[in-house]
Image (cartoon, rainbow, N blue to C red; front, side, top):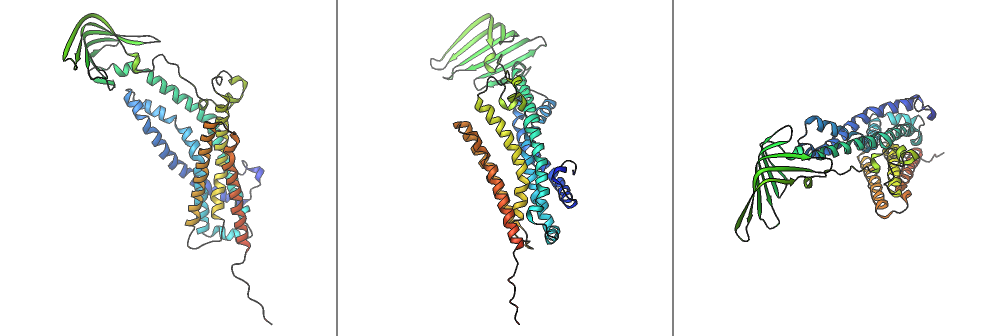
Length: 384
């Protein structure tokens, strides 16, 4: 790691502190990523199960969520690692010894700043490249699954309800689209029912539509208002299936689906031609903001704990203060991003939380320096 951050001139003590940060960082990264990934994966279960897909398809598309999840938890994991390591080193008196040897809070924060640089590059890799590529692939697979709605509707021996007003049953389904013993029941807004029955049928679909051609059947309509039942026999009848899905629709590509080079380079003009300039700017600045949050998160953690002297009773109040500060920074970022999207005001205001975080961290370290240099007790007057 010294080679990675060789421009920062890390001492052996700095490298020791830096090495202590990576273990907790990986631990918190796995924990936070697992929780958030599980929360996201549960949302796509309905998509997979409802469309009759296999477990491998669920594993594939849920894996595509990982880059975006990692992008969101790297900064939080860096912050948690900084708080954990600083608290542990305080508890084991390591920091006390370092401070007694003349290292002030600003000097002790150097390895944390180096660790923030590591988080910055890691988030940048995710936000500018891996996350857009994975998001694009995820939406592509999601679109392909939803386009396979004919296979979802036409299932042998099952009652299928594509919506609240229609129920379908097929006694036999062949590989070439052949159907037997077809029953389709519909309800309208007044509660009246229409029943389609057919001995034979055939699924017919192309790039623009999908339908069932019913053969040798009947249509029975029950009107509750007049209490009448109408029956019509037919030799052939076409039943449209396209209304139950986005059949023939084209998949749209969002700004989040394109890598940063595709958004800013002339070669990506075709891909981004449908986006407003404001959306492109917001997407680019949000990615930079995520990376900067990863940079400052470890500094917030260490600054909050170095603000005062060592306490044998622990640092619960400082830890809670660091957590509240981190939550406030993230909440402010989210609010300002939403504000810029809704109103189109000056995009640079989303960097205000980062500037505030740097200013607060610097102030806390400065206060820690003043507290460390101040004597614990007033010197006793010397009498002759």
